[in-house]
Image (cartoon, rainbow, N blue to C red):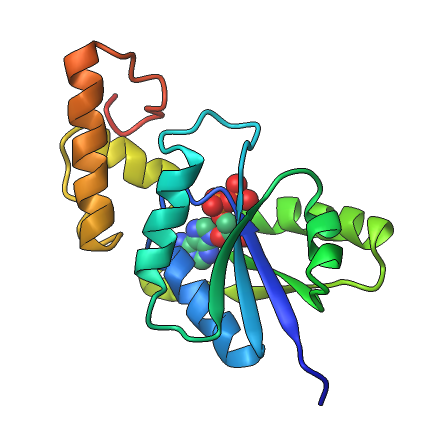
Amino acid sequence: MPFRRAVYPGSFDPAHYGHIDIVTRAARAFDEVYVAVYDRPAKKLLFDFKERVLMLEMALKDLPNVKVASYGGLTVDYAKKIEAFAIIRGLRVFSDFELEFRMALANRRLAPEIEVVTFIADERHLHISSSTVREIASLGGDVSSMCPPFVVEALAAKFHEHKQSGEERDYVISLGD
Ligand code: ADP
């Protein structure tokens, strides 16, 4: 079998146990996995690029065939550059499916030689998303079952910082209503 590298792209703002579960599964299926942090997604970010990379590095340090990297521009261009065989995505709920399906077809049009491989989330992590984690943490809730301790600490520090500077909580979506 030829050496097979995969790339797992995302915003990871911040990394949580759902992401870690998908990387762990991908690391078993591929020779090497690049977890690729998209530097400037079209979403408002809580953590800057360096913070997101650092938290992933800490979370994945025990997986020897996983590397944390970063990129900008098209995911398929980055995948080609690192000679990846596949782009990895995680699926939680049916609503993920439509978006992922459309993205996979668009990526295939752009780069037919690169496969999109999806892994199904562990049922314990189905409800976790970075936005839910941010929202709960911003309202002082306990997110320790959703992300590693250093992410919990980083969230607390970030929201403390925001409170001190009087920054708006415009990343809050619904749980505080
Ligand atoms: P993006 O901005 O590309 O959606 P995310 O960081 O939100 O980046 O997610 C990266 C990938 O991880 C996506 O494929 C997403 O579906 C998947 N993912 C997010 N949360 C979970 C979870 N709880 N379980 C499994 N996969 C997940």
